[in-house]
Length: 90
Image 1 (tube, one colour):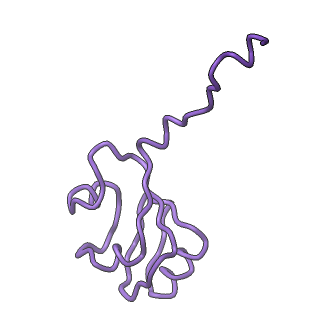
Image 2: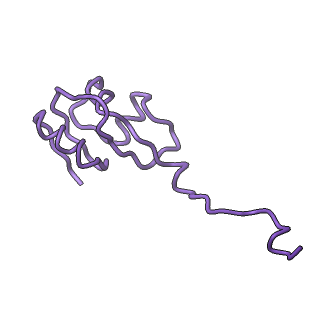
Image 3: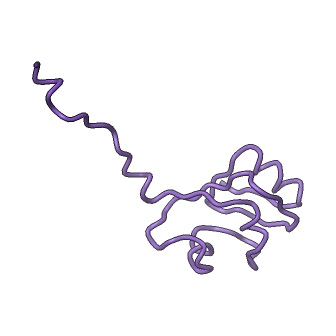
């Protein structure tokens, strides 16, 4: 049997996946802060201490106006946040 078939398969493992997480719109509406950033999420014990990158996904609903600062959002989440009176700052 050839060598390449005898060796175990090795794939790609992203190192960025260990420091990235997703949060829902429902979670944003439960927070008691107006400006949501990574530090505010860590202070509220929503994300872990090792997390550096956060992305908001369009799961649930939001009725409260929040301002995202330094957090990415999907297209559906952006539309929902802006419809509730919030804004997204890059």
